[in-house]
Each structure stands twice: as structure tokens, then as C-alpha cells.
Image 1 (tube, helix red, strand yellow):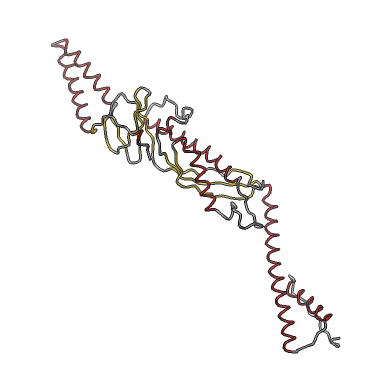
Image 2 (cartoon, one colour):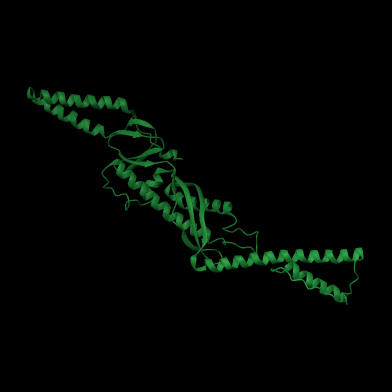
Length: 311
């Protein structure tokens, strides 16, 4: 929220009442100009009223919700006007219009190195808004994008908005690199460790905190930031895919072997308990070998029929 220390405390007049008074000034100027041919002093009064009219016209402010105007008196900051509606203030004040509405930023994904040095492509989307107009206007240099030669209020506000967006873009890039470098893309060997792939909520919270630390100097605040793109860089994507496939195959094989061993043990125990056949150690080893081949093989086993004696 806007710092109360910087809120405008000067005189403010309802815009419609001020408009009526300005029209009276203009009418008075016209009246004295018309009467100038009868008395020379009337021309002087006409000029005075016309000058007053021209000066007073510059004092009007019209604000929509979530808009603000920073006011300066010959370079000295006098506060920020945030009242919604139509008002009149000191016409000698310089006005800088800014928007307090929420805006989003969705930059292109960037290439960074994660904690273990793997290059990854990572992108994010963030929602930000201006909270302190004094910091935003006077703590960062926006002159390269918002030149003082802007000829209109709308043009000046647009240039300032571009300056703020440029500042957010640069700082968000740096913050994303900083956060991404603190975590590995993935680490199946230590599942308790936070990773970019598996712990999105925690990473997003860290990203918001880092962004606000960087943008606080400019009076800007990030309300939400989320990683919306994450992938290995093209140069290592194929290798990491093969690694992931190998890890999946190994995990599947481990599960198959565990199941096969359990089934072989169950078969031997059942044969022994029901007295179907009495096998010596050599025949048990052969049976275990055959069952493991059948249960763990990728291809269907081809049975061999023994037509002779078991021994």
C-alpha cells in the first residue's frame, strides 16, 4: 500500500465546482475584452483573467479506480493523489500518472544451470503491481524509457509503465537464475531433497520471496510467481531421457525380481508342505533357476518336456 508519509495533503477542490469557477474566469476575461474599446483598463483586466483561466485549467485531475498521480512542486515531491473521481489541485504542480493495477509478465524461458550443473530451460509467469509510487518514480532511473519530452499524459503514463515492466523483466530474470541454481532438476537418489521438478509449491514460494526482495527498492510487489516451463536443455535432453528410461527399467526389474523370488519361495514351500515331490538341493537349485528364467524373462518361455525319469 502507498506509504502514508507520501500521501498528498494539499488543498483539493471538487472538480465540478472548480470547473464552474474556471468558466466564470473565462467569461470574465471575454467580458473585459469586449469592454476594452470603452476603457483601456478593461483590457488589462481581461488579460489578467485570461492568464488566470489558462493556469487554473491545468489543475484538473480525473482518476479511475487503482490509478494515482504523483505531484511535484518545482521538483519537490508533495505526495501522491489517489482519490477516485474528478478533482482540482494546485495548477502549478507537475503531475505524473501511474497505474496501481495488477499486471502479469510471461517472459520467454531462459537457460540456467541447476544445482548439479545440468543446463535446463526454465520459464515463469508472475503477477505484480506498483505499491509505492515514490520509490517507483524516484528510486529507479526510467528516463531512458520514459523521456521527459513525452507530450501528453497518456504518452507519459505509457512510457512509465514500460519502464516498470522492463525493470521487473530484468530483475525476474536474475531472481529465476538465482533460485534455479539452488536446486537440482531432479534427484531420485535423495527423494527428501527439494527439486525443481518435484517440489513446485516450495520453489514458487522461494521465487516470490526472492523477487520481492529485489523489487522492493522500486516500490513494486509480486503477488504470485509460478514456474510454468521446465525441461532439460536440448544438448543434454536425449542423454537425460535415456538415463530416466534406464532408471525406470532398473526399478521395474527390481520389482519383477522381488516378485519372482517370492513366488519361487512360495512354490517350494507349497511342494514341501503338501509332499508333492521330494527334491534334493541340486534339484531345488535347478528348479529355482528355471522358475526365475520363466518369471523374469521378457519373452515367453519355451517348455521342454522330459519323457524320462526325473533323475
